[in-house]
Image 1 (tube, one colour):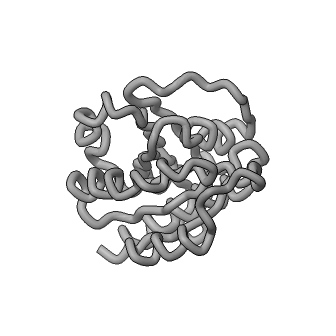
Image 2: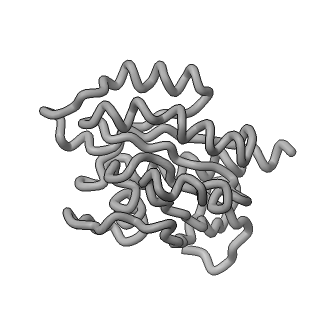
Length: 176
């Protein structure tokens, strides 16, 4: 890792309660997985420094937002200053996929057109999947988002997702 930070980006994790937002963040930051995270109340703030090809040192400020309906009124406040976000659903729970529009709308109302990356999490539970990859890819295309399948449990594609979103954010910023 580099000591020099050239960019600081704020990323929010959006999605219903228990889709694996906190698990994804801890897999990314500490490369660890626990089965028993408590629900995030409000927001959990974390950070990880990394190197992104072509950009150098980047400090990712990660805002893990509580997915419960009771925190909806605080979303706008938490989204303030976000450069991009993950919109996450649990591949084994269709209702978390059906609520994606609400999360995207909240983000766009607050931040406008900023990079979003759709994550279908929990692909390690392959025998329980309720949302097919083709359906999620189509949804992502329709909403001009990238899409990636992840498993916080196995670590599959977690780092790739974070680096992909950060790179997309930096690509956008460098165009401005």
